[in-house]
Image 1 (cartoon, rainbow over the protein chains, first blue to last red):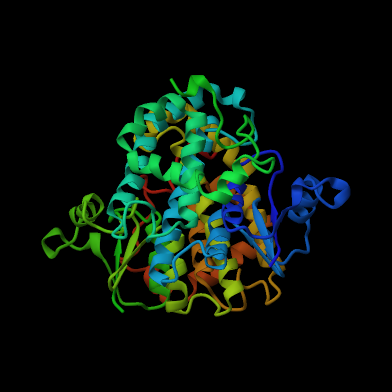
Image 2: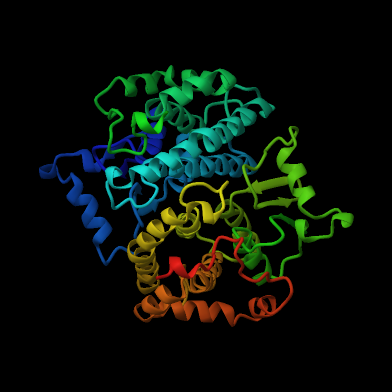
Amino acid sequence: MRYELYYWPSIQGRGEFVRLALEDAGAEYVDVARLPERGGGGIPVLMRFLESRSVEHPPFAPPFLKAGKLVIAQTANILLFLGPRLGLVPKNEATRFWAHQLQLTIADWVAEVHDTHHPISSGLYYEEQKPEAKRRAADFRTERLPKFLDYFEQVLKRNPKGTDYLVGKAVSYVDLSMFQMIAGLRYAFPRAMARLEPTHPRLVALHDRVSARRRIAAYLSSQRRLPFNQQGIFRHYPELDA
Amino acid sequence: MRYELYYWPSIQGRGEFVRLALEDAGAEYVDVARLPERGGGGIPVLMRFLESRSVEHPPFAPPFLKAGKLVIAQTANILLFLGPRLGLVPKNEATRFWAHQLQLTIADWVAEVHDTHHPISSGLYYEEQKPEAKRRAADFRTERLPKFLDYFEQVLKRNPKGTDYLVGKAVSYVDLSMFQMIAGLRYAFPRAMARLEPTHPRLVALHDRVSARRRIAAYLSSQRRLPFNQQGIFRHYPELDA
């Protein structure tokens, strides 16, 4: 199966959680909007699909994945679909619900990270909502960030199959996503993370374990891995990381 | 199967999306935290579970559902689990991913409704973030609310099985959730909704179709249906509905 991923071509964003799963599995895929426009790629192909009035199952927003005739949107839903197909989740049904539950909690966390720099509107620039962003980011750093980190550190600690992975005894798509969270948070909130990491050693070790995986390491050092930047979800504004 | 739902006992909140599915299916369930404390219910039983350090699969937040040995959290994940068991989603796998995708988009919408009155922090009162709430609510009313309504109106319009339901040709848990969205938005933003409803006739008809269902109608007129109030996700502050 050759997958087609549709996502904004200039940011990691929510698409990165899907890219990491495809890369780790060595799946055959095309990152469609990153192809040149002349080659049938670019943002126009993305917009055409979103704006079409004839698509039967329209996505509300990118990312979305085409797998044969199927079109699937919502990051966590895409990973729910890909997990079993890429061998990135255990077979047991109860465990799959647990993995998905963790992924949905990561999705909530991602939305909160986004809202630290855009607490009023995604349609306005950061500079147009800076005082509100400072207040929201302060709450995020002191209340929400520790709460999420504590939660996932506990999930690792309580895994009866060992503390190496979040779900079961082998890597799952949830671990790949957690790597991305730690990496992104380090970029956006280096000071807050430097303070919090020592009390979350299992999460830090998980980040390192994932980044050392052969295909992930190759991906991270390739041109396919976009750098973090000030257009994505994880942005570094020093005033939000006081 | 006798289900146990764990959610805050005084609000509809996210738990209501689960309650509606259980009620429509006539499922046997207990709304645990609404039982008297002496009968093993109340908030303490909820908190005990959330704070326990020995639960193998801890929820990040309510609602969560116990089904035999299984504990499932995240509203959309609970509905993903319940849908097939309650006969509230078609059998076809691709259609189930589509239903779940729509439910996740509803979850995003719910989070945005919440943030209209709490744009800075859930840990602060509304009165402590009122100027920010006014700005965020204005953006919600003029940008986000029409965008979500347009999207779901289109989903109804494009359903090849007819425009009566969002997914396939019979009611699904997604329709029940959409009823709750329309009802909640009418409570919170009556002026904005009065303006927008005429251009979204299929959604309005869906709301009426769901509320006329026998078990839903019985539920809505029972004591089990909590009223909307100023502690839930949908809150009516006239200044946010200018």
